[in-house]
Length: 282
Length: 213
Image (cartoon, rainbow over the protein chains, first blue to last red):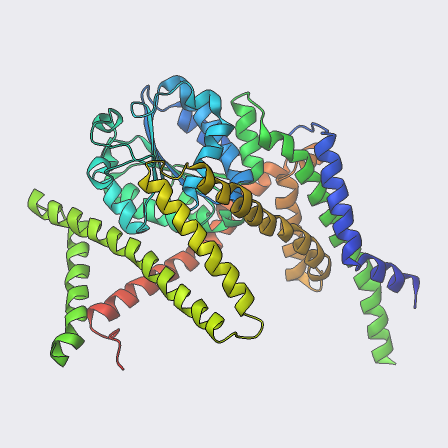
């Protein structure tokens, strides 16, 4: 067995790679480096879009993510809420996924400064989980108060002041779809953006970014944030670095280790392949 | 019920609903039609909620059967599934009926102490598999593979802070790749899926999707 084979076999031991990954991520999380980062055009566009929203902007936020995705998308939503707070917004939160009601308290705990300054029922409301997927989204567009009789906490929506100004799709300045999947993006584009021209902002996981990109290019989505990097950029733009910024160095460490492994894998692969070819030609 | 009605009743209902929703989506309708549209949407949401209930009953029946037959390698998991299902259902129902919504401490505990850690763990484990498979799969065997690795590296460098330190151009380059190359590659997929939906809808309209025994 040649030295190349020995190195290849050593690197192929999964436990070593897993151990290295774990140690690097933990070490960087405990000792942040604080490297600088560039701001992408798409993040800046979202920031500028939110910045241009009028005073008292009416926003519908779909909390469509599960715990696994919260690390990436919750910081985006938190940063957006912090940016829009000085505009005295009216925010209707809803979930078209059953995990939404479990994630919403986490969001409240993540940005307590936002929720402490807004009054429930007047400035914000959480409708909870609505079954029906696209049907529910279509019904919301035609009148929330009539469609949802009670909010997530069992309070009647009939007398809530927020619905005097933010009830139908046409009333809203923007929909913010915070999602770990692609389905709700299409629901809101089909049921809110196309018929009522309500702009849609997409906050999504980086893995689904490619499938969402065409909606942005076609202008059906007003803006898009994808992944932890975009969340970190947004936090930097609003000058409130938080969870996403602090996790970026750890993400760098993990990515660099994976890239080193890919390069090493190729450096070892080619001599092995040439050797195999040589053997076969003999 | 006559066999004709049993056979054609659901199809006719679906046909009428499809036509109604297509017409009301694309054309401006009188307010009375809007009211009907809203009512039908409410019914749709209710039906979807009932579908969850039907699914729950169905999965319970299946696992009760596994337990009754003591199916080897399955019945202990079925016991766990049913136990969790009953506990969550009872806690959730009490939480809602008592006016807590989903915030009752015991119900929230199920989410916070069981569901959230499990869900996050499964997702977090993926990074280890991803790292290991990258080492084996990302082989530069030909020009296409080289381009794949190259674009992968550019996007990865654009997504990490150290990439900006090495070369600030990674971020705009990745933006360009996403805006043009990725969008160009995905648009046909989305259009193709859309055409598929239209064809399925047309098949339903023309009665080609009728379920026959």
